[in-house]
Length: 212
Image 1 (cartoon, rainbow, N blue to C red):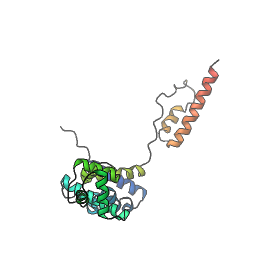
Image 2 (image 1 turned 120 degrees about the vertical axis):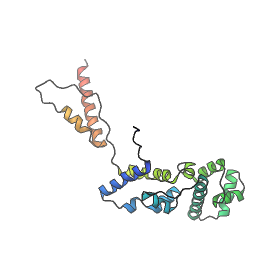
Image 3 (image 1 turned 90 degrees about the vertical axis):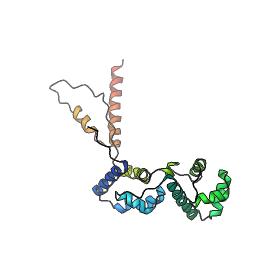
Image 4 (image 1 turned 180 degrees about the vertical axis):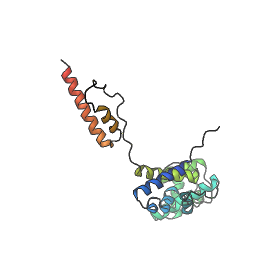
């Protein structure tokens, strides 16, 4: 019997996000803003909406992705900086050692860049995720963009208490140490730090008293 297939990363992340949004009574459209996510991932907004709804976008090739995402990135750069395509192409030509005509065709989405030029574009535009931001499938790109949102909504994990717990007290004595250590697993990190500091201070005091 074959082992069960692990859930795909994006569906599982979306499931956890939806559960947290519902649990906290948050506005789903604000947390999962398709327009904002499209701008951050260089994906078409329609593709982002399709993925957020659990559907599969139309298939594409790596070349299609690279051309479309570079054009989206270049257009956003021109809008943000107020520069013209000719100026951007000239700047890329000087920085990356390609002709201005070729740089313009790549930024317009008409040509597929070489691996070297793609690497140069990542550095020029400071693209998070490197070359995979242009080449990875849409679901993978969106999944990476959602992980910071998930981390911001999920509660932090409390650190595990030390495993070398003190020895049990002699029978017949009230001892709350085992109970306290079990409950300490659910303490928030800041309270665990206080408890840890208190225990350490007591141990240091005991060591000082035991030394001649």
